Image (cartoon, rainbow, N blue to C red; front, side, top):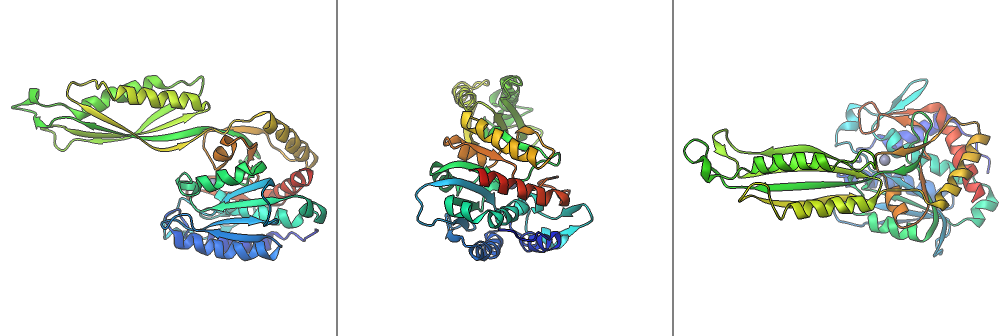
Length: 374
Ligand SMILES: [Zn+2]
């Protein structure tokens, strides 16, 4: 279907999605975004099911042109939440100049969702009839999809291919792979005592933490990309008290999910034999996202997308990204997944977030042309 693409209309529509505080922990805001999006998709002939996956979460939207389908040719992924707290929109609502659009979540990833909506209505009537398409819009991507992961994975298992509509890089790059990640909380317990009169009676939780911190540094393997970072530490109560408590929060990133499991085992084994006599350590994995690694089927899809991007004369390359998305989950269940089908932008998760206006239409065209080939 030919529709007139007007940048001014796109920005007006985007404004309705951006000017709502809808952080992952603001479910009412996410519900408002869903209230804007659901009728838009219905208006172009898609049916929308609203899922409330957890009482603390916002709604998720399952959108399809084939409500009775048990199998989908393609799944598109997007998230309605942002990382920003309530009050952000009042401070810096959507604004724009000649080249860029600014605002919380404008690039990550309200524009990706809006562009997918445009692409679906630009699809030829034949292709819309032929393809079974599902669009999953979740409410919790920025907190690791803790509520929606199983739902996303179930849809991915029913789908032949997944395109994630997160933004393309400001360079134009698309995403072929993403590192996996995990977050650990390590809790160290010792024995408190007076640092002056009874030092020898104490067991320092901070000394134990210090050993662990350096041991974790030694687990880093820059060659395979399995990296760890002790990002936050806390502990102790007073300078003259041997500390009986300390805590470290640790980030783990990896290409190879097996290596991540080895690290997990290593940490749990280390906890059985603390460095300091009398200390104890608890290892708690707070979050885990497997890596998104291309298979042969993904490589075929990369070739197809590259062909279409070349025909459109786009500037792009295929990037291996350090950060995760829901593509990590869909790839991990074995469904070939590519990411970066939104417009181009950068500065994500910060006040500097921006979207590049002249990338909007070409990237919609790319998505349309790729969908026409499926
Ligand atoms: Zn995102």
